[in-house]
Image: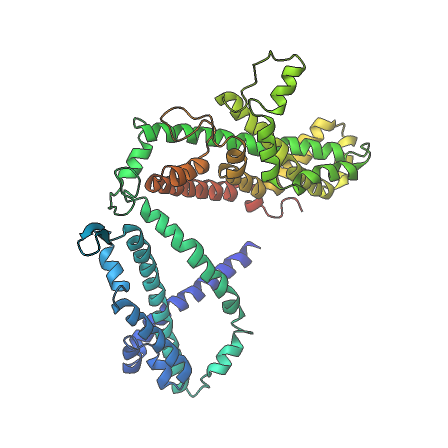
Length: 467
């Protein structure tokens, strides 16, 4: 098996090497036509008889040149990118009309957005330029060797046969580029500016290098102290929200799955109902019930558990609020875990349990040596996903407590996670630069943790371990 994998890896490397050498070979052996096609895209295809493809490549180049040189085009935005604009909007008194008129100045936000988009467009154009040179070289080589040069109709037909992967992958890749990569790069660049309501830098802002990172990670600053406090609670929350759901969900699933348990279908149906109800509806109802003057505190007063005028501070005390969101998250998350674990329990070979019973193993030992290892092996990717999702669990925190309670002068509440604090910094406080730094930090840390954990797990290392 290892020899087969080694051979497959060698084949992939050879193919990758051939692909990377194609442009170099085209420049070395293509001749004057291919060299000129580096300046005039599609020229090689035109000389090889691929008229339509050559015209398409040339049209792409013409469109790109036109976009770059036109007024307010690519060159303009790239030239503005280093300074992010300097001209402020001016208020000028119009004597004739008797009113103030405004002379619109630069907008750093638009300059940054269009500059980033232009840079990405240039990278995409370089990729297309490389493809055009390779395509022209390949077509000319086929023509010189007497082989058939495919026309545009044959190229289109190949998209539904040999090159179907290109047809199917292009739309999702474009969607990923436009709706994910461009906004992500824009957010990353924003972290190196002073784009913030502080000192009125919402219209015109400047590059500040790593100043935002230093301010956020410095525990002696106000924003730094809030960051480390929120980070600590985020990790505590993610740990308990993930593993309490896993263990309690596993416990409930095992009880329902026991041969002596009756009405299994009814219990699973009841748990499924909590999933069927929209989560935001459930959370808002629970929030109303557990307010200081909500129905829960009112009932406790009526039953004599609390004195009149007293209440349990589910929302106003930091410790109570944190325990409250963890417990409610159990109610929300356990049904999902039960559904996941139920399918896994049914797939564990019954012979393993029978052999364990013959060897004298009790229920706890069977769970420890058979059930738990098998479930961890299978559910490791799921647990990593859940842990990541809980760090970014906006709904439960924001809809239950809104991040409260909040100390005076602070933007982050005692139950805020990094993601809810990021939202508040952006929407409520308009400190977009600090919010961008938090977004970058969260993305990098979660990516590293998820990759390292998964690659170290048995699910990745020993794929056939439980077969």
